[in-house]
Image (cartoon, rainbow, N blue to C red; front, side, top):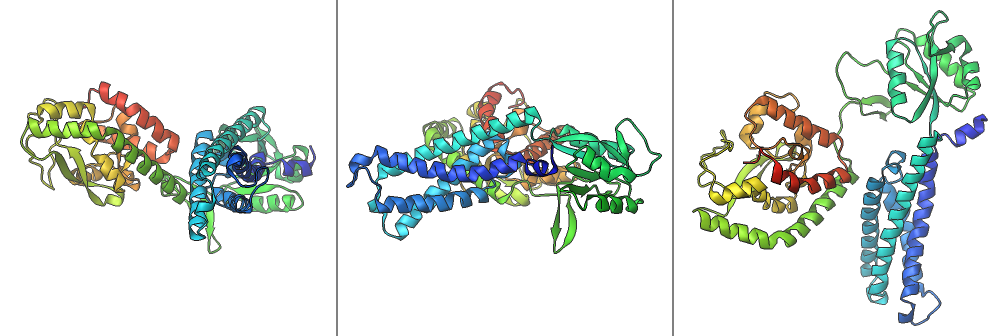
Length: 468
């Protein structure tokens, strides 16, 4: 393999992302044209495209790659995830169509276009973009299975630190770790290719594309020798920093005002992901409210007839960034003795629970009014469950990572709930396990994970023995 070819094909996923930009434009224009042909009989000039429609195609062709790019859809790491790809592309397509409608309204050309044509264009666009994403993800899966996307890599350094770096990189499945390059001739081992005195020859001989320097900090000459060897080669060099003896998460490395920085903490969702989750919440919550409104009306009537008191129970809970909000539930208890500083959790066979309330709590139907909290932007459909303010104060002093769950909006259901971690938390260990589940969700959020949790929640509610 020649060096030039290696450099050209070192990142096929990036190349595929670039190709998808062109494919997306072609798909959008083709979808619009096919919709036009199907509605041809309704136009004045059959067989030809009227100029207003050409303008629409041109505007879509300009908007598509830009809106898609802003969504992050072309990032190589996302190309492997078909569900994320489809979800993001459909949201981006909806934004594109919305911008086209806005442009048409501003130019007062709305009546020129056929509504049937626009609906068909939207549908064909959805289909084309979704199929393209699935095919792209499938192609990447085949590349990865054949090793085509593996990057040939060597680690400079020996000993436990360098071996750990090599092992972690190998475990990702993205790199072919050819071996270690020792900093001194006397260093040897099963994976050692040679030492720094032969580094340039080793790089050429093994056709290495990237070097990771994991040499100790007290060997600065190692970095100088590596840099001298690679100056004439198309190769990437990265340095593994020696971190303090602390258990710090590292999310990335970047530069601010020219200063190199390690990213050791991050907000859980990017701006695009926040928008995606907000759209998901509002659309699904509105749909569920419409579908479940008859059931909610019956529940409200049953609560009112079963015991005196209001239909809805309202309580201050801790939300995003520990901001309090008023959570809504169907009232399930006859009396409430809670105060801001002391909230008594429901226990098994709690005498305060009414007959209707017991059924509602067992099935989680008492949570349905929180769809209004979701529409108001105070909650999400899926996220860490919101706790009473008194519990926030209490458990934040007992559990180190407790407040980390407030980096995301609280949810009606969550990863903890579908894994049996709902109900009374009468011991710190139970709350600690719930917090660990919430933090797992925050770190691994995706649209698919939300859908999975939403689909499982009704079944879990029916079989969970901790619901009372």
